[in-house]
Image (tube, rainbow, N blue to C red; front, side, top):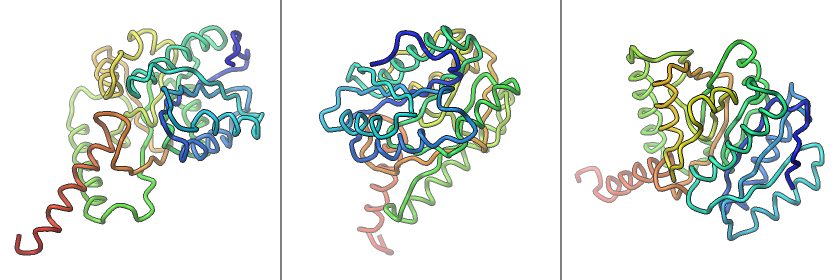
Length: 264
């Protein structure tokens, strides 16, 4: 059960929406429990169980029992998409941070199929100390040879084009070391989150909409290579749109091309 009063040492609250992630939630939580450069009492994990029909909740409970140093608190999601589940967690995180740390407390987001780097939190908290209000982390595919080479190349090329487009944008603000600002690795100070009206109630692409709101509000987004995660390259996603859908379309094109052959 989530405690009503957060620890006074709390500096960051990590939101993780999860729906039917029993196979991947262990790796996600293991990485969060192993964060370096930040004390256990300085962060917590709000795991939003979004009407799971598998053993995600049970696996998380077992992990918490085996790792008592990790402050892991389950929340109930509405069961209507990762965007709405993420919003439940971020709203709770904002309230808890204002009750402890104040406006410079950090609301972080990642996904249940994602593994954060050991210094993921430390790098973000360091950026906040340097003045960051919103942070987009670098998201790599955690691929182990499951995707065809041309699909991976297509993903890399798409990333390159999006990065070049962002660099040409005269209205961009903040360090632009890559192009991403996605739910698998994003963060905002509690003050910034509240100032832009929070996360909109959207089933998917809530992160893209948030990016637009931040830009319209004049909030610089620090897209930092020092903040890194690896996410699942699966082709069947939990959201109606997003990375997995993009990879699925690339994979479908690959299969069509392969079936047609060199003369197709």
